Length: 220
Length: 220
DNA sequence: GTCTATACGGGGATAGAC
DNA sequence: GTCTATCCCCGTATAGAC
Image (cartoon, rainbow over the protein chains, first blue to last red):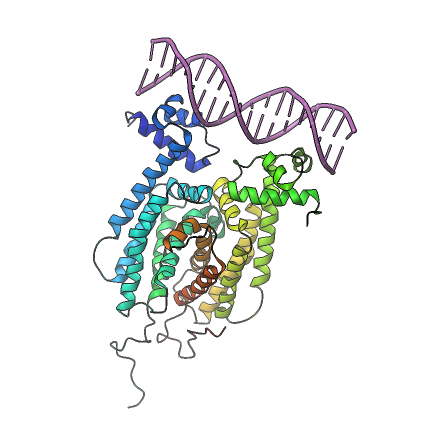
């Protein structure tokens, strides 16, 4: 466990500290101490602090892109696939506490400039696929036709994203104590988010569907 | 405009810089320069950097709480009040570009510890009122009974919150260029968010409500 | 209340031995 | 590849004149 290559030890320690304190407050010496290596080695491996941070983010986002992509595969009708998507999102965000924090920090500190590549990749894959899923449902007359698929996709993603990223505020609203969202609450909210999104997307029962016996005609 | 009391000049400059760069990267001298006053004066007025930051946040959040509260007043059925709420949220978040960034920074940098009072206040007023609005709609059989009101409230708020806070990523997803969400896009997304939330909340047309089932009430 | 000068510490980064 | 020692800049904060 501790025989990991020095480089990875540094990366791991840096990830934790950057997530917890941010780029500016985290010092090279702190990272070295946390990683159990000499601080001068950071310069040997990464050149400078900025590039170390960049590599931390690369590694993190690469894993995230890969995981969400692999979990978006599979067949099924739009409804079950949307449920799977939301569940996967919750799982990824909850898998490591550093995920949401680091992403949020990068968003606000550098306008995601260290992660543009990966964000574009996400856009070209996961997000696009989510949009397509919505459109597919619309073509099948299962989802409302009046929703903009991209806006709908943002709304779908926003629920869990905000739940995790704004947890310090959300937990006050929900009367929760812990500093990190507990697994049970995550599970419950993820289920809610999926159903909330589906309720928003699905065509109201009696509206169009002629197939399902449109209620007994009062005539006769 | 420039004859504002020194204290406020400092507060204004600090708000902008803290929002743009964060607490750690912003220096006292920078704030002084931006405010057009001697940096040593910051210590005369605020004691130290931390307390200056604290006051910036206090002022900001106080205004926010006041505005959302005042805009949550008024009568009407749950549907129109929810539309008003979402519109107000969009207006507040868009009113000053520093709002979303500072709030997000505070969330991630200090777990909202500088704003606990105001967050609790928000929780006790706006958020609570939003929950009550949902419950009221449920009692009136207009909203689905199976939704947890607090989770629903989080989902409602999350859409616009995420839209603004994650804009650097959202803009990539939406193929938008500008660094700040343009007024038109804000307007469109806000409208979408309200309709999305309503579609999620309303009981399906044919299910129970025999009366009006007010779906597309887009009359203004 | 406003300014100048400066003490003080800490953090990033490098040189060079082993 | 790893470690020690150190340089140098820069940011916070204070002292004290005006």
